[in-house]
Amino acid sequence: MPASTGTEAAARVADVLLLFTGGPEYLGVSTISRELGLSKAVVYRILQSLVSREVLATDPGVVGYRLGPAAVALGASALRRFDARTAAAPVLRRLRDETGETTTLSGLVGDERVYLEQFESRAEIKMTVDIGKRFPLHAGSSGKAMLANLPPWRRDAVLAGELAALTERTITDEAALRDELTTIAAEGVAVSLGERQAGAGSVAAPLIGPDGEVHGAISICGPEYRFTPEKIERYRRLVHDATEEIARNWAGPQAAEATR
Image 1: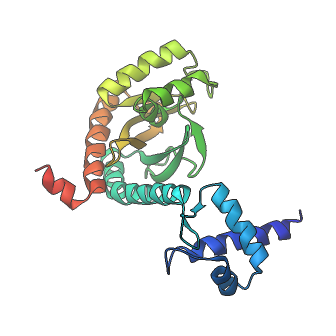
Image 2: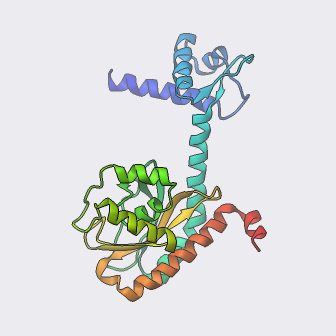
Image 3: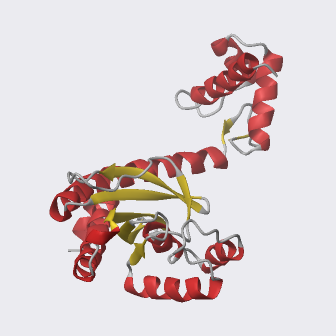
């Protein structure tokens, strides 16, 4: 299929979905066809494809289509991440200023993690991260902080897979990694010295959402030589307290008031 044809097809699917973001709950083939200027045959094929993937759904006795569970899940995931970034931003900015190091927010994406936000250190020599790039959960403090707090079945699935060595210090032995994850879960903080990136140090804590599940992690990261035992101990306390503050911000003023 030519690239232009594929782009047009993707645009048509997107246009169909966007119609469901406003207006009536149910939309039929004729309405969509009329609104978008597409043939009913094309609209029907798009709708059937979306239904097969549970992005759209139908109900007995009702003419038309509505948003399905997959669309709801996507929307909820996007909203959580948006809310997490909004709640975390002022805390991470302050944490950057307090420590002089780069601070980051990572999100859980399937069995991997991705950097969602960073506040770069103002130091001449500093660490920066690639926003949007995916990394395995077993390497680095942010990934381990999330992995340690996943439900056991999800954690086991990750540990049963490939534990690739990103550097010579990456922990690839399953038993050793399980022992460390147990400690991380108990202490609420993970530390990495050159495990994901050679020469980099980081301290991270898991970010637990209002639903009680881990959705990400925040970290303080920088050149490994600056991560002395004294600073690591200080950063452990800072990230732990910061995640609690972010969680309160994330839950909203009503939840914060209820905990007083």
